[in-house]
Length: 244
Ligand SMILES: Nc1nc2c(ncn2[C@@H]2O[C@H](COP(=O)(O)OP(=O)(O)OP(=O)(O)O)[C@@H](O)[C@H]2O)c(=O)[nH]1
Ligand SMILES: [Mg+2]
Image (cartoon, rainbow, N blue to C red; front, side, top):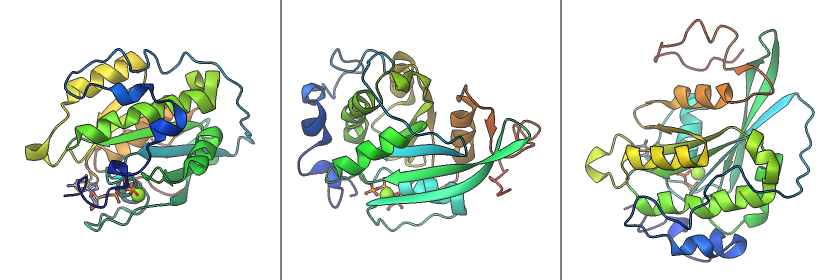
């Protein structure tokens, strides 16, 4: 049992404790809670975001064991493993299309689900252009653990968060019999926060490319796509991200 054993998410000090204790009062039994941020977009603070325009940095966040690394591995390498090796932090790079004629580097940071490295996580937020918030559809706890992460995003990123593409991702959709979080619930929260929402299976390679396509399409400052001819290939679910 992933979340009951090695998952760093279920033990030790929580990110909520280091950021803001308020979301700890989440009522897991109800679909909407007054203690959740009403909008992900409405806080202000000072953020320094170095941006040379050549990189597009996407950071993955979520509790331990939800499948962040598996999604990234599936996208980058087309592989999946049943083994669980907790991440500290890994970075991957892919070349993507930018503004139709140019290319830029999609830099994907796969962060830890452990709460032991808050400084690293805050740095990834500070440097990130876009964010992927992952929970497992088989774990309501992992869904609730996104609340302190969102508060941390708001705190670190401040008003810049309103320009940042963000996707809420329910992974392990292949485990239907163990489902604890309905899609409608996540969709409601995503709508409330003003972010995108999708369910994936890294195991079965479902919606992985779609997730990245949706995220890049949300970027307003640049026209980003996985490949130059991405728009032409829309609807072809079998298409993998190709390195240009
Ligand atoms: N059934 C199923 N299992 C998955 C899926 N994605 C990941 N897993 C499994 O879940 C476990 C944890 O996956 P990871 O990708 O390592 O999780 P993580 O979120 O990166 O965990 P941390 O690095 O500790 O934060 C592994 O045993 C994976 O094989 C999925 O889509 N379906
Ligand atoms: Mg990992």
